[in-house]
Length: 121
Image (cartoon, rainbow, N blue to C red; front, top):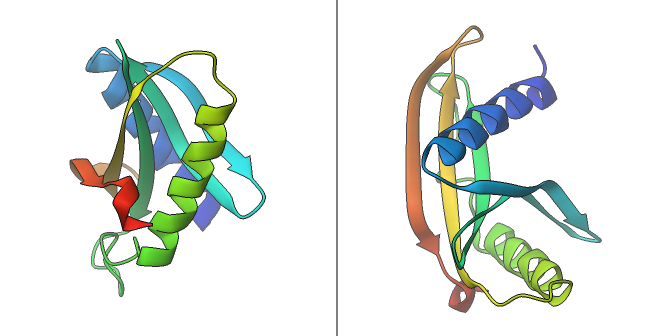
């Protein structure tokens, strides 16, 4: 299984998790030049921009360490572009989901609410 397939499975897992929490998935893999957001979900007047990191057990670089200042800045830039396209007002939050996948199943999952904010850009 390649990294793209593994990432897709992680995103699927996180989407199911968010739906169980009462969220509506608005967009997946929203892209602009220079940035991408894995999942955009909404619940009431809250909008969640979710970065998903899917890893095999015992990675060389932890998923948390992969969310660099530059990565945060690109996510924030992309979120601003998405918000600019809306006719609604939302409270926004940047979350990170870490999925550990052993090649057959999810063996660990951590979801960080408010992992960072727009001041991190």
